Length: 172
Image 1 (spheres, rainbow, N blue to C red):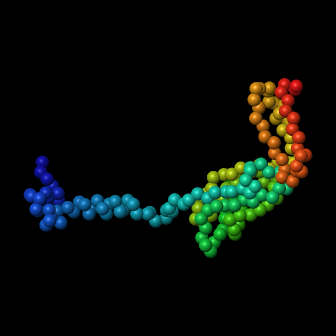
Image 2: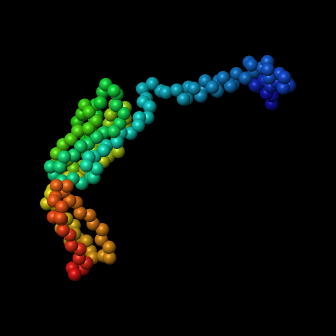
Image 3: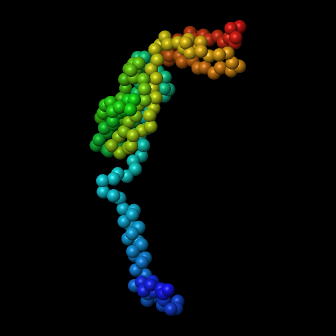
């Protein structure tokens, strides 16, 4: 088995200086690598993911509360169009990255957004509850245990000192 002619080896170290045409394989590998790394027409580069921000920052809001959704993603300076999705369905397009609305029960669900230079955001959940909503049915289902963790949601307009809480264990 001999050495292929395109892989000619210099006889001595001093022969490297005048051996430019003896490595055509190097140029072939370079062009092959460039072809694989070149973008394919019709494909898009990976875009950064947009992000939905809620104001107020919590996911549970009361009916009639004002909610602002903001889509943080790259925009074209002349085009701030933002597409909004509610519960997986395309809902509307805004000419600015944020908008405000009064919360209704139908506003509950998952929100996503996308801009011209960003990919679709991860979903953000918003839950709209009524002001007189109680968890009495859920509380009745809880069996007595050593530790129960619960939270209390107060409306920001509630006067200080009006909220009262009592904690009883085993109805004592």
